[in-house]
Length: 217
Image 1 (cartoon, helix red, strand yellow):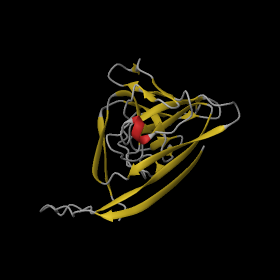
Image 2 (tube, helix red, strand yellow; image 1 turned 45 degrees about the vertical axis):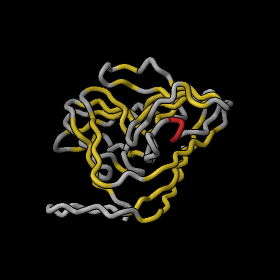
Image 3 (cartoon, one colour; image 1 turned 90 degrees about the vertical axis):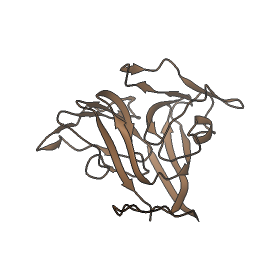
Image 4 (cartoon, helix red, strand yellow; image 1 turned 120 degrees about the horizontal axis):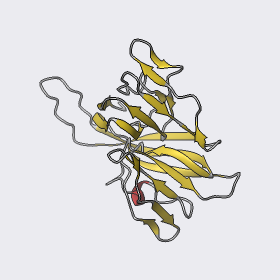
């Protein structure tokens, strides 16, 4: 999968007010797009940008006919029975949401051996960001459009015995190597690397918050 990212600095907005704790002030909106080149079948994606209410009709208004979005329900520990489908000329039915950092499977019904470009457009999330990582299985993605090592670069709150499952688009199967986090040793056998706009399954032994303080300045 090839990923292309472009971030463009937009107009200044009203400056925020720093607290007495000297928190950062974020005064610039950075808007842009992220292109994901995906094959036929399933891929794991994550929304890396903010766009309105983050409805599928806003963040993914132009995808191939019969594209589907499948989301996982961590409370029920199973995939949702609601599958969002796209029909050319009509849009998404139903029109669900995919907020920044939220992951899902996308299923592209395109000819075998071909690829399609999926484009996210919106603002880069900035400031103090938090997303919940519940106990058990959940699909997670970075809240910001950044590629890197899961904990070292993206600051994922790894705990003892956590495991990460990454999906291989080419083989249409999960990678056979499943990284596990061991306190005092880190990720074994290797720390997962997460690309912009992609997501992963995590098996969390204890719930945690994935927090970032991010600015494009």
